Amino acid sequence: MLAKILNNPLLMQSLWSIIARFVGVGLNFAVAILIAQKLPESEAGMFLLLITYVTGFALFSRIGLDQLLMKEVASAHEDDVHFRGSFLRSSYKFIIILSIIFIAFWLLLSPLIRDYSFDGEIELNYLLFAGIGILFYNFVILNSTYLKAIQKTVIAVLSQNALPATTLIIVLALFWNSFELEQRYIYLYTFSLILAGSFAIYLTWPHLPSKNDDHSKAKQLGFTHLFKKSLPLAPVAIFSFLMIFADTIMVSFFLPNSDVAYYNIAGRISFVILFFLGALEATIYPRLLNVYKHKQDQLQSFFWQSTALVIGIVLSVTLMMYLLSDWILLAFGKNYVEGSQASLGLLLIAQLLRAASITFSFMFIIREKVRFLNSILVLALVINLVCNVIFIKMYGIEGAALATLISNGVLLFSVLVLFITNKLLTLTTQTKEQGEQTT
View (tube, rainbow, N blue to C red):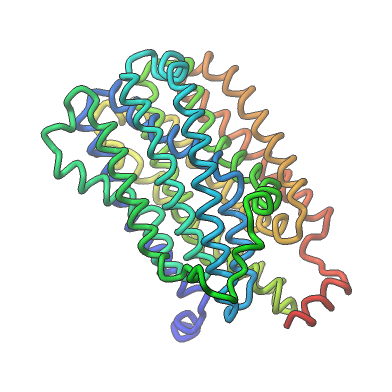
């Protein structure tokens, strides 16, 4: 059995991805613990909320480009290096333009965000400066996605999760005396994103084709072309983000910054499940795309093998996190044990339900049934928002966690129902013939 495991590329690559993800989890936890212990709870809440806003604006600005990059590059033949490289070059140009547009939105909306989400306690100049991080965080995600697509999974996982945390730790160590002074941690965070984005570009720069390369297809991948192709994929990523972070943002609207810190820490601990899920996604999704495109006779066995792998690992992680939750919270401070304990238990179950739907969701994208997935995400998001408004007022941060649990349950149930009714794993004769011709 050990020999079979060692010779199974899916299991081994998943194992290495999980190890890489675990490194990222450890570094992100180190950052969160440092923030929670060194800053007052209200300041810690603002810092963690700022990170959520920067990553959220960055995700909106990509409008599905990372999903398109994964889909196109992972589906391309391994020998088609010119197409892969030119697609990456065009993606750079695309993301720079859109990031600048969304940075402008950030500058316009910053006064409102300060007053309604940060209770007016964050310095406006610092908040405005943080908008620069949108562009460089996009570089991190774009390059990590490309590395996943060409099956450089371990380095891709490290660059997406461990790299931003590592640069932040380095910057904080270099400017430790300025960390607690007048919210200068915002400057340090933004500078760390600039370093992370620059290094991410360095990792994928060798894959870019020369401008004089006659085989490059970059001319066919203009802004309008990428916009039309990526826009239909945007709702999947945007609604997924809102499903995860809408409750954190709504807690900031209804409750003080200290409660934002308690809920944010509970959420970050529960996100460990999503970190492991991301490692599995980095391994499974590109291969599932490639199997569907070139080896359709293996699709069903690979799909169910991947689904069993995801559920088995995520369930194990959830149980371990629940049993160790008190000890983990104690690392952030005694106040967080009491303030975050109840909401953490609900969030762990919620993330388990969400994780169970991931391989089924992949098939909606692969079979170009994204509109169904978008409809499910919209339904779950609306339920999430409505439940947040009702339950936060009644139960505080535990109400936000309950809202997430209910909406994730609806998400999983809806995905399974539409997956079965649309027979997404059943290939038509025409689809099989196209796969054989491609092979």
